[in-house]
Length: 418
Ligand code: SAH
Ligand code: TYD
Ligand code: ZN
Image (tube, rainbow, N blue to C red):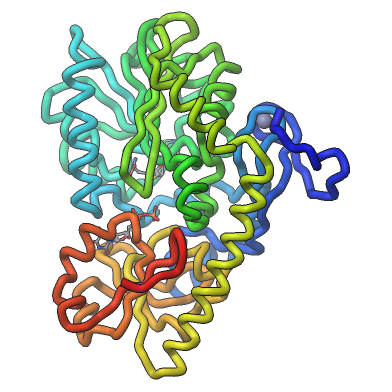
């Protein structure tokens, strides 16, 4: 039960928990939001879709989750534009993950790995290079074609229980089921976990990494909330979730990527001894107050303050005749621009290296996406860094901008200029 003394008399809204059926208490309402990866052209039907981004925490299992879901076919369309390989940092990260898996869980005879949400094959290409049996599952056709062109095997499909059953029937059980930045995207997580339980070999592991709730709260990174981040996982809520499917959380590892993530390792209950890291992270979460409503009430106040400070700054700069351009057409930027009411009047365009996004308009805000090359033609006075999780890589690439007096605007953990 979430520790919350004021709860009995509270008028706060509640809704049912997607994981355990308990009562979720709402702590923030961002209002109507678009599909965060719907970078659109005029006339695209997907551009008009809106849903209410309402977030709460379950009083029983502590899962932080959204109330409303977007249809999965609207989010993960055949032309879904996100490309996992778009960042050098992430390419390196997934290469290291693959090499570590090859040296450990996949070191036995004829190992088999399934990846849920393999996107452009950024992780599996190393597995394929080693000649190990693998299968990616991803509904985003265009991204899967990029993977296939590199010899990675992909099934263009949504992973769920029936997909898992047919993979098992055709190819046998998996020693590793791996997934990065996908499981938290899936409201219908019950069929995913039933599928995992069906496909996993008796001693196999299910490993998934996602943005970590503890980091999001600590850094006030409210822009990690958008349609695709339906859940914000923590060790405690993941442990409770997987236990319902005969699975057990046996290891956790904190990762620096995407502003702070955790890789959860799950096995069949009783098969592996949980590592001390699980106990340590659970203790840390309770010290941080991650199960307490008051923590989210304070977070909510910080979100409101960031909106005020950011909009005030952008209006002041506009009044001074300074040009501010966005950098990184991220999904995160959808929440920032739509919640704060930032449109082309304050940020006339955003530069991004992804060809699939360029020439399109940002979801909801209509801010046009231009290529990264256009950033210097001419340099703006300020750049609003929506891809703050890639700050190091981007600031190094754009050193000349700073050298010529350009300044970066960041909005987490607070609005500041560097
Ligand atoms: N793993 C990559 C891509 C993450 S983007 C990375 O970490 O960068 C999320 C991906 O999950 C998209 O490619 C999307 O098409 C895919 N996806 C969404 N729902 C899925 C499902 N039910 N089964 C398999 N893949 C799914
Ligand atoms: P990312 O933060 O990974 O994703 P999310 O959509 O989950 O918020 O997205 C980074 C975006 O920034 C992506 O569209 C590519 C772009 N980008 C650049 O334009 N230049 C760069 O140097 C890097 C690293 C990313
Ligand atoms: Zn619950």
